[in-house]
Image (cartoon, one colour):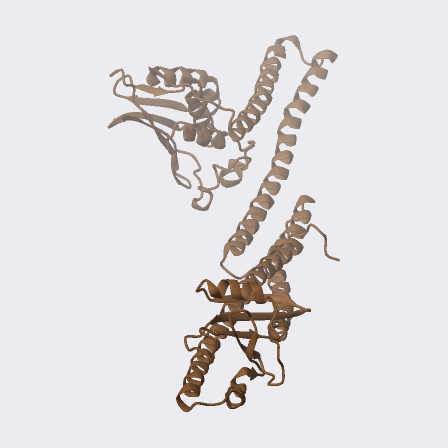
Amino acid sequence: MLKKNSIFVRLFLSYSFIIIVSFVLFIGVYFYLFHINLYKEFEDIYQHQFTQVEKLLSNQKKFNWSENETAEIISNYLNQPGYHIYIVDETGKQIFGPDLNQDSPLISRSSEILSQVQSEKIFSKGYIENGELRYTIATKLTTNLNEVEQPIMVMVFHELKHEYQRVIWMILFTFFITLLLTGIILWFMSKRITAPLMEMSEIARHYAKGDFSKSVHYQLDDEIGQLAKSFNYMANELNNLETIRKQYISNLSHELRSPLTTLKGFIIALMDGTIPSNRQQHYYRLMRDETERMIRLVNDTLNMNQLEEGHYKIFRTNYNLTDQIKSIINKFEPHCKEKQLQIRLHAARDYYVYADKDRIEQVIVNLIRNAIQFSYMNSYIDITLTREDKNVHVKIQDYGIGIEEQHLNLIWRRFYKVDEARSNKSGAGLGLAIVKSILDLHESEVNVYSKPGEGTIFSFKLPASKAGK
């Protein structure tokens, strides 16, 4: 059953309304032109008969016809199937008419006709008399007739109602046939246009329930076809996002459960006195590390949400990038000792940049942490700063396990676990997504080059400070 407010009904009714209004306008214009053309045709007939009557009256004088002879000859012109002709004097008295035995003219509106004709004007008017539509034309004749100096010729067209009825029936018949055919065509056109939209509406309900298995099938490359492609693309992206979301929740639950389980075990051991006093500091440090790990995970999640929602704003200042990196390297010294790594900074001098200091620190911290996590034992991490035109080029290189080429375009996705591409190590998969989002806010492109077994290079550029330092 069709819904009253469905797009199919509205589209069908809109098209039907436009066609009906257009056809009504067409009927109006056609009927008006028919009316004008009919009256013009009557005027042409009148002009022709006027000329013939003038010739007959001239022949009456020339051949000296009697009044009866003249009436008999002229009667053939005065009585026609579609009109009658009367010749009257200045008072409206009939001289000749369609009925030879009739003494008085069968003309209505005599006073109106005479007053207008006497003022040297042509009388032409349509009117309804006794339920019949008529059209009358009258003018003075130029030839006198017996004692009448300027007789008047009056032509009355009758049975016009039949003409109009015939035209109206033809128009109405055409209208209903056209309306029927166009209605059928519009029905199928509206169905064809709205079918993919109705399909999208139905499929959207499945998407709302988390079922992304269906797609819209539409072959034409029009606006609806583009919408169908976008709809299918959206479904694919939603499906990917849903898969990533489920994976992220699973990973996040695992990431939080592991340190919480560890903390619980250590706390129970400390409370039971299982851990000797000389080893307690060691386990306190482990508990601190696990706590920091959870805090970092929560912070990364919050930062990612702020970046996605557009609430993250940057505040650029001129500052010393070289000193910032040195400070970050010192913070990672305990982590480097665990894997016996050495972070080397290569900078010919101090480099100043115009950027958001706190946000860039997040970028460098995430990239260094990433490099430490996937570096081999007893290896190096090189950080290189160089000046390129108006920018400072930052390059962070590790010599670890590297990334497979097919994963390079995926590592920037939120919730994507880097370890799936590089190793089986843990990670929530937000660090590199945050890096890219922050650098996008700085209008800086981040590049990655990696070769499995040889390491990875991350690089980006920041605008150099305008202070000239």
